[in-house]
Image 1 (cartoon, rainbow, N blue to C red):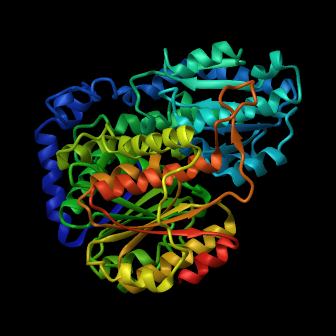
Image 2: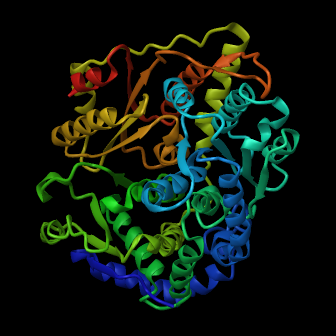
Image 3: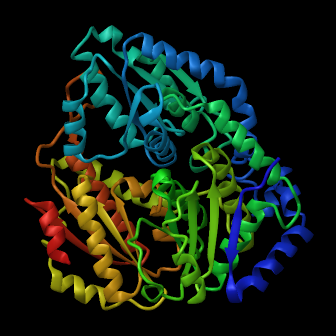
Length: 545
């Protein structure tokens, strides 16, 4: 058993955090969580009693390590060099993290993530990959995720076009819950393997299950060592004492949010890649409901202490000897901003930090009086998008929507509504690229400078499976800027895998998802402005600054 290095400077909030810790200990919250007592969060056990498998998933996965290793070896023996994971949200964020942190120096498959409906991104990926050397992980808990199944149908046809149709299924594997539609589909199309996950684990808590660990094994991560580090922290998180790290972190997150410090600004060592994105989904989707929410702020350009409002709290996720943010933390604390440093000795400490954040989120949910395992507002955008897709399939066109071109003056007028404690979220239904990342980052900086507000950015529809819950479920203090582009070259979605007939394209689906999300935001009385981009997308983003 060990504890993670945890350094804190809470300033004026120190006494409140200490009092919360004592209350948690007095009320036996840690023993009750481990006893799977749903009343820690809600009198009704719905989506709690069947969502606590994450507490024991690390230990349960031990017996599956040999199977995963042998499976990875069989893929390499059959000549596969690349794997593409088709998934969204909890199915994609941890595999993406493993790929970016570990794949460059491990002897395994090269792993890429496809979590978009952007036609240009999908088309370029298909043009770049070798069908004879590429396998696919179809990953969805529900087995019905529209983005994932649409991509499966496309890539099944792509594989089948280059080999006998009867063999195409051998390039695919499934990760899903028992009895899901994907399990049935995998049997029908003769997938190479089906990995049935513990159904008592929610998507965003599933990193230490097949959803995270199978992709890790395929790229050569030492899964046994990763679980060793997880179980060390799990032992510390069983303690009903103030030095329980998950208890401490959860108490701090909740107390600071209740004091108005609800913009959880994450500073991440470069060697930890997109760990912030994984934390973002876990915290935002778990806490953003019932008029509350902790907003993780990920990837925002670092500023001076004066650049931040009084709604900020900072967490530095520090890897090894990296100290790029070490000098700024004392200055932030001196300016009154609470700070926490969580230290990882090496990359394998990620195993422990996954569980640390899961426990902290569960504890914070208790203190905030919310249910941290459901996502009641995620379905609203999906429902609106499904209606629009149905309209398109019946009429051949989407309903008219007024989306003007980028207009800097209109944006300035919109941002003038911002008040202290608000945040501004960029919803980029655009093709992701490094150049696009840079343009959006400059726009974020411009917005923060003008408004003093925290800023976030998410590519659509990816963020709908991450921060989308918080955007509709929090206290309504967000300003939303939706940026939508059409595909340069659209890609049809096969209606059925193995056949060419198509009634909709990825381009139409992406626009329907953007329109559906806008309708859901407006139904929740959120402030929204929308722009439609054409031609040079990056230049048009720059124009807005």
